[in-house]
Image (cartoon, rainbow, N blue to C red):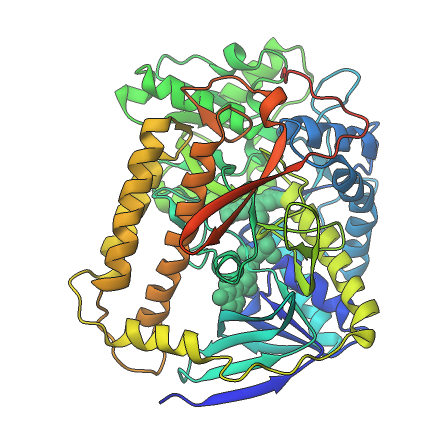
Length: 594
Ligand SMILES: Cc1cc2nc3c(=O)[nH]c(=O)nc-3n(C[C@H](O)[C@H](O)[C@H](O)COP(=O)(O)OP(=O)(O)OC[C@H]3O[C@@H](n4cnc5c(N)ncnc54)[C@H](O)[C@@H]3O)c2cc1C
């Protein structure tokens, strides 16, 4: 039998991406914090974020946080909670300056101020033209954020448990007492006993076939909470980013279009002029992904294939700048300096030099708008009525505050991490001293240990990767950029079948305990299957189209019946849905025109 070790800290933060590290930094100022991460912290997906982090600094042209807030609400297709959006956009300014003061090497304008560029959906609210709001460090903004925060955590002596895979939450009534983790190196189980637990475990793009997400993004934190009775909010909304490398899904940042890059179909048409006449290629992601999907379906792919071109070559871009009467021009040096990683990716993976040739792209599963419901202090909600689970927090992609509503604007995830990660950390620091350390329930780790033994020793027919491929196929075909009742019924039937096979007919090759990634991946598949099912179920239920949720059988947004958040829970193997009203302050829902 594996050994069980116990650790005690005031607060346990699960995940060491931008949200987890920001929270750890603040929480550790007044409490004893453990950060438990299945990856070495600087390998978290935040490090892959490319294009930028928005804040209305107004460093180059007029801007203010209310414009940022309006764009975020409009981008969300009016589903975002406007009180939370105000917090996001107001506090973004201070959070970015704080990162700068921590030493983050942002790109700068010649006058020394942080450089800002255009990004999809970010506008001057008066002229409706794109505004330069995205602060960036070349196209490695997330890498710089992660490194900066990790260094600060080390300086502040945060306790790190690297390569510890959290597999269960210890819930005691309406409160929490810690988590259970597997030490990847030894296979031993560890109980982390604490007064507060925070999940900052990122997204679950691996539910789909073509995704920009790292292999590690398997939705563990969301699935663990769901199994322990926490509702999942707005799971039907998953973002497809318009520009993933054809077949591979690797992301090509929207920053490429921010610098002037344009989308062209097989007929050489700049097709976004048709779908978003004012803002064109810089419309919000849901709009651009659907446009690409429709072009492909109409046979307008390049040479009839399943991709279109993203063209940032100076030859093409400068022609369009001239046509638009703009004085700016793009050069080879601009591409090499502002988009070095993108240039490197396309040269390495495609053998294409983006200075000379366009890039083949297709939509790629990118970002979970939904997740663990929280209030603006990152406290987890027990239900749609807004009751709190004592001591449980969530922030970052795994959480749903909700600032992104039905569709997230580019750059707003990094803002979300630092703003709500910081608020979580502050709340933990203030409250942990007065909180009670609940006694651990007897045999707290028993059920998860039994599940691991089942997976390790089962002698079924299917390998986890086979089930995973089937799940990814059905999610891509049936719960993708467009959906219908029929397609989602097909997905739900297949997912049910997959769940039965996962529970009763699976086998893994590695039967050992040491560094058994085969076993951990099998366990992760269980999380993906769980979240795929919740997504398909919530999506079938929502009979309208809004943001990232586009139904061919209900093509219109229906504010009368559906201007509300969905909360999905599972009782005795049955899904149950409840609803929470959207908080509307200054911006009344309108039709979105880009
Ligand atoms: C390629 C790419 C480019 C992007 N570019 C941008 C951009 O330019 N601007 C922007 O705003 N957003 C961007 N995004 C989105 C943004 O980067 C992510 O939403 C964000 O970084 C998520 O951060 P996080 O802190 O929530 O989680 P992550 O950074 O994903 O970190 C998750 C952490 O949880 C840990 N973890 C997970 N499961 C477990 C477990 N079971 N046990 C223990 N630890 C666990 C992992 O080890 C990791 O430390 C991009 C995303 C991708 C994929």
